[in-house]
Length: 310
Image 1: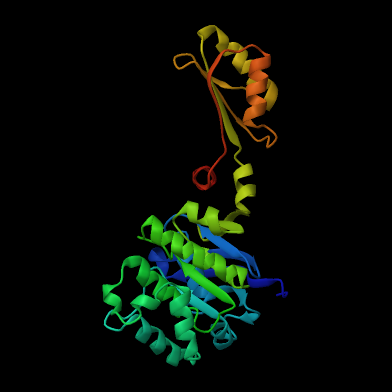
Image 2: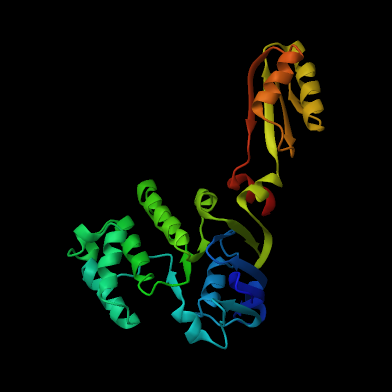
């Protein structure tokens, strides 16, 4: 592993059970996460995302392959790995009978973190005013922020977030997003698994699409979106104008449009990033095509997911 990668794995394999009922959770997973970045792991349920996090966080031992986190081998040096990481699971693991401050102090003692760190984190995560209240009185978003705060007591170099905003309302989710952005600004590396594709689009510098325990596709959000192209659509004012609209779209994109006479619509998928809506409108106007509507829809990560993952 070079110093440029905070997480690096090659050929990770993990099987649960044996015989006919065995489940291959990881089947040769390769990852390379640069320091100070957010890497989003996306995939359908059962793809191996949570297993990957548990192996990298030394909570599970791989059956094959190698992995290094913060420069340490997860199998040969698990204690060293744990000193450099923080982990937040899918559900908040705080004690509801303890106050927010008591929860942090308890974990702080276990992790030998400075006592002053408790006050810093309560303030950082907007929990100072609720610090003396039992955690059971916290909202879901507050409990998740408290849980995230506990994972940061030791200022980890690498933070594993396994679906950290599951079940949260949009306001609470945005609060977690802001916290993650602050962490990466300060140099923390984040490995994020999520079911919310908008979350990955907002936070991730790089994305790995996992399918069948392997890295099926990888790239920046923009690179993955570019693989499936944009969708240009024109609605004409008259039936007779539909062929002309099709000619314009064909000339701009080099692809044959799909025509719908009933809705007077011509549409085409294009991989050309130079096609913009103003350019499309100008071309239609120059050709004298009477248009009711014209649109150019860039793909979302939802589109990427549905297209690339069977």
